[in-house]
Amino acid sequence: MVEVHKVSGAAYDGNVYLILDDRPILVDAGMMAGPTLKNIKKYIDPSKIEMILLTHCHHDHSGAAAELKEATGARILLSEKEVTCVGDDLTTVAYLFGMEAPQFQVDETLSEGRILDIGKWKLEVLETPGHSQGSICLYEKTEKVLFSGDTVFPDGNIGRTDMYGGDTIKLIKSIERLTSLDVKTMYPGHMEITSRDVNRQIQMSLRFAKSVL
Ligand SMILES: [Zn+2]
Image 1: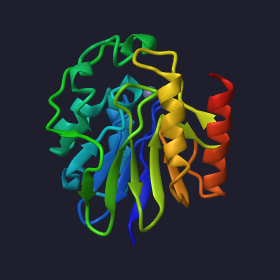
Image 2: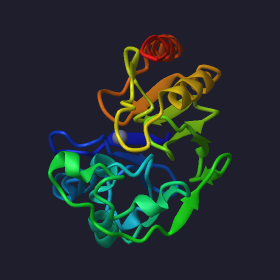
Image 3: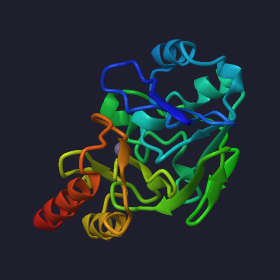
Image 4: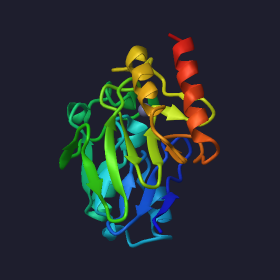
């Protein structure tokens, strides 16, 4: 069975997920590498991690990518639409955290329809712009698992669209698309993991997004 562990440890950090499949990966990096690495070590030798998939470039998801790459040797993957954001305080919104965006090398870019075969799980890349211009979600069809980044959160919550690259109309379209999926478990970029009637929760997010337009 594929295990997923939330390994982020610092307050205000985005959620970092460790997926233990044949090829272990991280979904997002958070902004504080220290506590995350400590948590990773509870489950696996960090050097076994092959990829760090970033759901988007925002600092609370990507700020520790360079340090985690250094510690693990993993390759960094980010949407082709956000490669130019790396190292930019405005587009990564690092300035909102009073921080500077570190430079790092993106090893591979992600785009719509790409399937990442990590063993038992095949993670499909869905482009879901709105919270940021190149936000992605990852969907595992067989297990009905969704890594939703900052596009949707549990209990009908939605990603902010009031930062650089945000677009509410695009967000609504992206969430509409997510409502066409069958999701059993959602791993959001913030808040808690949920398996409780997830399709309904995403429907609520859609209604909410439409109401704030
Ligand atoms: Zn974000």
